[in-house]
Amino acid sequence: MKIGDLARRTGVSRRLLRYYEEQGLLRPVRLPNGYREYGEPDVAAVRHIRAMLAAGLPTAVIARLLDCVHDDGDRIVPTACPGMVSNLRRERERISATIEQLQTSQRALDAMLASVRPTPLGR
Image (tube, rainbow, N blue to C red; front, side, top):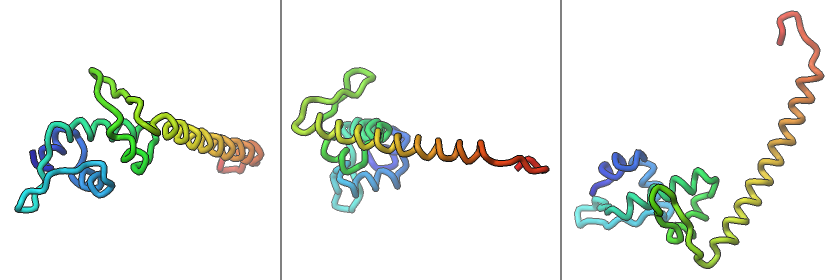
């Protein structure tokens, strides 16, 4: 299938599919005319990429882990590839630290808002 077909099947733009290729996440066959040729495994790969992006994983980590996931019905299931657990734990810690930083910022903003004196215009 061509890139437009893959885009329609996955709901992902052609531009984003080309980006996934640049990042090494997709490896379409290149035809002699330069067109990309995708197969059914690419449809699944895009679904896996989208799920891992939704989980907060950066594309560099996804590139290392993409071959370690498969479909189990409607679910995407990781397999025990080398480094899978350590990569997921590291990313979870990174996300937790980011959440803590955002909560600190939120508390600071709440304190600032609580100390603002009302103006006649209510701003």
